[in-house]
Length: 83
Image 1 (cartoon, one colour):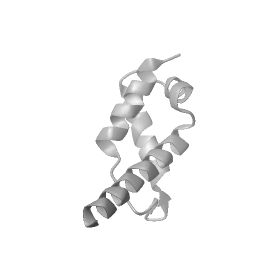
Image 2 (tube, rainbow, N blue to C red):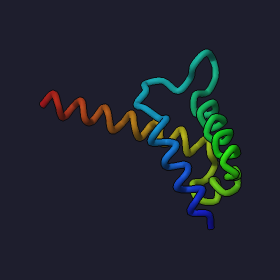
Image 3 (cartoon, rainbow, N blue to C red):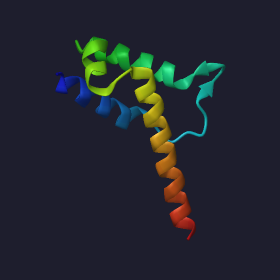
């Protein structure tokens, strides 16, 4: 297994995915656009899509899930701040 792929994906997500209330931009799927950007950066470092997907599953779904998680965390943070 490629722990390197997981570490790269997690680091990339932490640096590039912010809470957002939308999944589409200009008619394009934001998770797909972000996954493409992640894979392009990974390729430049010699990390393959297979290496990443071996650890995190299908890249677009992984990015979409991470986007949703970040948004949910922010919503809960804001709710707690209001209390």
